[in-house]
Image 1 (cartoon, rainbow, N blue to C red):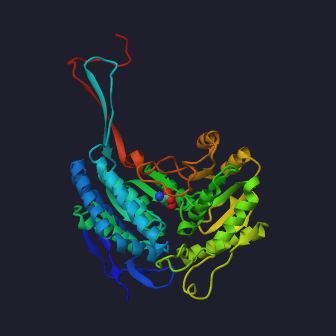
Image 2 (image 1 turned 30 degrees about the horizontal axis):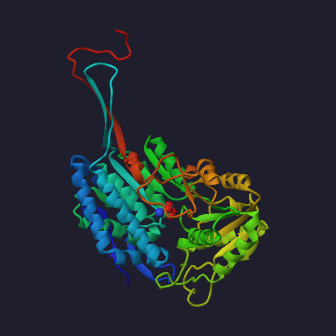
Image 3 (image 1 turned 180 degrees about the horizontal axis):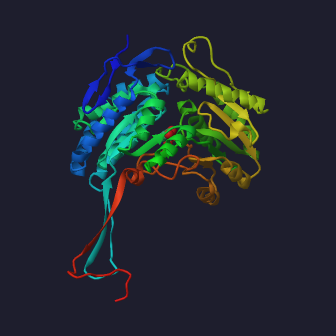
Length: 492
Ligand code: UN1
């Protein structure tokens, strides 16, 4: 029997009497990992009430003191990194070094965010009048809902939670259901770190019940959502009715361009990591490889040859390079796209099947898959979120940029070239929130803004100096110390 886990509301772990439950499973083996409460609307409302009540005192805790508690949580993650990394790997299937990387990204961001406790910078600017001061303050928004996906089950929650908390907000956190154990462990660290009751609450359960209740509750002033574009649109619309601030971090269709002058060894390592790391289940994953015609045959040949030897297996095992996809649902979706690709007439060059036989029998393993595709096919335009790469041949840089940009998403992008002019042109012209030069589309660092354009989001950026924008209101203050009525804009 696996362990039962509760909701965390107002500083207490609880399993409400008669609660319905659900469990999570290891996508490599099918083993059950834990059972969790499927929260009802009234449970969610209690969590929001707790957060709402705690806000009054939490906002008054000096920000550097809030930072101390965050740093303590980071220390706990660091202490428990090995076991947390294993939990990530067991619950969503990325290989252990990537599971550990997920936890490291959480630690990195919390440390970064806690420093904001000594900044939370405002502005001071001149007044057009004498004896008058003009400045801005950052103030918390109130109760924040953090709704997060399964693909980075410790890092992404912490991008939101740590930034919200350092800014003085309180949080109700709803993790993806299939990584509820990771979500529980994310919160356990903050509880152990001494966060006051009600400041961070955990409600597990479905998007339809928990997510909906959170987004509809008028006491929730901001919603930070990372996930699929369709759900993101629903969250945005529902939040709009209550004029909430909604931050969305959605899909991608990220290209890696390889020019004829590129270092091909480097570009090959790049696409292997970018497209098949985390089995392609990153918003930033490379799903289109755009090759200059002069290196097309050679590069593709080498890629296929290397991928044939890619070690797919239990992601906990040493030396395994790719694990399963995260769930049955994910498997269906990815295999569905492979069928679409074949029907559209894309040439299947490698993979394209579910892996069977030991050690794959009990898991959701899909062979690394490559299509030689034509730009415009659905597999070249829609997010697949799995180990499926479409390869596209282009004549020159102009065509590469045109193809790269001709999708509805705009998260990450990459170009391999030694030409400094093309590098700078790519920086300016690739329609994406992130551009890498001579590096893969994945692997963003937390001290820089993260987010995208077009259908990838609605304009915000997480992490970096922009992290707190999502969670603070700007208060503008005018101090007139002239001791008389001064009138701006009016001629004296
Ligand atoms: C995501 O997939 O939503 O840049 C986040 C990267 C990671 C974060 C990805 N640092 O690949």
